[in-house]
Image 1 (cartoon, rainbow, N blue to C red):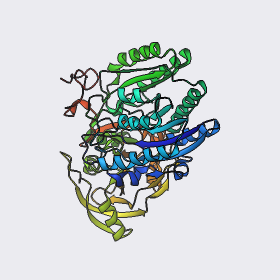
Image 2: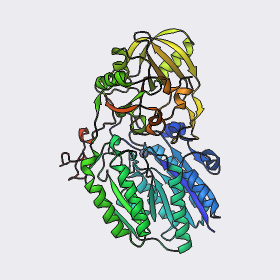
Image 3: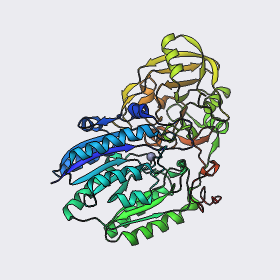
Image 4: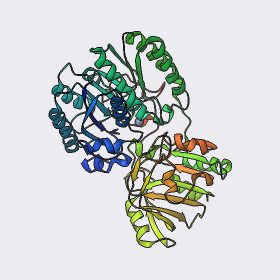
Length: 497
Ligand SMILES: [Zn+2]
């Protein structure tokens, strides 16, 4: 039985997004527990679908003793500011030094962090961890499915293990899987053979969903190869919004047969390229189709993917809301529009008051503007509730002032405001304001894919709409500068030169 240090530092960086992540962004957490130092970490993640929670449970079950260092996560955004990185990484490293000697290290990482001062945030963190514990102490990290895995990360960790679902319903399970691998390594007393290969094309977020093809089949085949070959494999479709050399998709794995298994998996993902294409709808077209097909009890769900707060959007663009109002949609619900000033105004005015708002549109996104109009304040909330959907299960939300507004110009349209950024991926975000999403004909969500875990079961149909926002659904539309040359910017698309 070993003494194992636990830490975590998660950020998904969209280098094209409008706002950076400062230390306060990690304190706020964006739905995650916020910055944790030392032993309070254990209670902060307990019972939630969080990788560290799964790892802690599995390591304790194997009889290891645990020491908590630091854990932090923030909403996806542009770069992590150097000050925030140094404070959190500095605390993690200082506490790791205090914990020595340790027999192993488990880290709960995202894998797509770009810091102002380091393009490969996790590579730098792993370098520092390795420097403290030396070459022989096993260091294992779990990663998000959207990790942009680098060679430095692979070299500095003994093993990396990524989620297999998008929506990420397996976060805690992945932490547990990483922990079991660490436990096996401690028992075997040796580092497993590792293999890593990058792919040479990018895919947009909406087409990476593991509920649909081609990812559904890829992950099924991954598990079949694992069982056959006795290896641990990961496929990360990556986060195609981080402009640095090693951005993109990768496959990696561990075990005696890792080399041949990874070659096989690499071939499967390479061959899947044409099947990663996805149909997108203009906002006006999406609303038109949703109006004709949606029913109370079986709404059409519109995914406003390009303003997804889970991919660096601020959740405040107004294109879809504008289309709903212009087309006089009936029994339509949109959420969450992140606008703290308007949420405060609604609270100041009170329930049943009519107020002229200038909603959203404050991030300076080209083609977007605030939406002015009169709304009735129907319901208010303090933003404190616990999520119940398959992905955010157990997450304790603190979203600040929230409000439910009804448009006076289009009385069939209601919008949920929140004060702190979080992706609309759990029905509790609406129920907190007394709204049952199923009772709508149209539900428009600021999300790319995560919403599918909780909303697809009630949806008649899902349409991914393309409206102005910083999380472009087609990676070829970004102005890439630092990406390595030779990568196709979308499946079968133009080559970055
Ligand atoms: Zn992710």
